[in-house]
Image 1 (cartoon, one colour):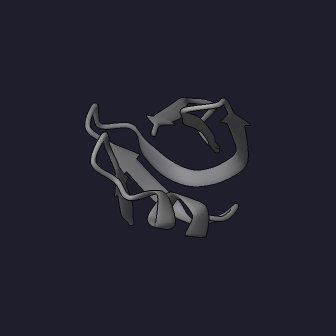
Image 2: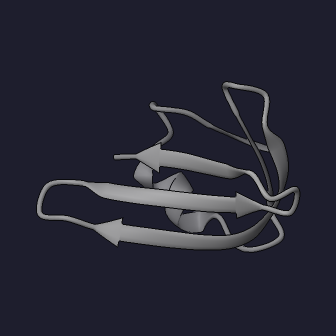
Length: 60
């Protein structure tokens, strides 16, 4: 299980794939159902939808 928080390196976020199990600081956890990455000029936003329907967000 990979823990996602504000200090998670970009390299680790890029390695995650559908089916991997993740958790966040608020206690949400589960297998990744889908991944969406939004790229701006100075930031990356990773959205991980887990199978329970919850969304885990990682800003970089």
